[in-house]
Image (spheres, rainbow, N blue to C red):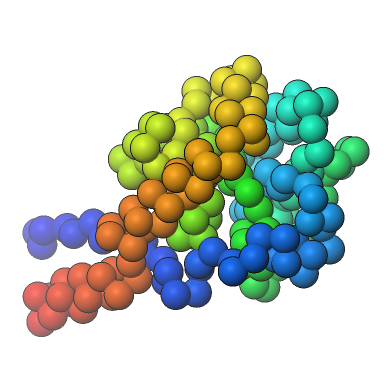
Length: 202
């Protein structure tokens, strides 16, 4: 029996990178540049628990000018439409949408590695995620993101309020998130490990 090797997913930080201008990135996809954007990108399924995100968004929406940007498609009967919610649908290129976001949220009940979270981190977005799957191994709470208990609207609301009120904190967590991806999940390193593993099979 051959030994197994686990190789982490890789992200290209030269493609997934922060925009030069956040206001311009928002205008590019038709969002008011004065609004703060909370976002999610991925398949819309029940396990993503987007209802928790919607409820937390409604809480913070009362406090200021924010929008919720949902990128992706999935189960038709999961309807998230409402005031301040933008359903962008599935996109061939998600980079402009990630670059327009100020905060990325993954409220999933279950995950594996979550490539979408790594892509958001590579774009220097502060992320708020549930500690499921491999996510809890690369997101260090309060160092390169926030972790909140599954389905906990109150905690998610709390962390959203912190980041919405403190642009400096958003920047710090976003830069730390991008550093994590470049050091641990750079696509070139993943490709080299795959080559090395295949060579050992010969």
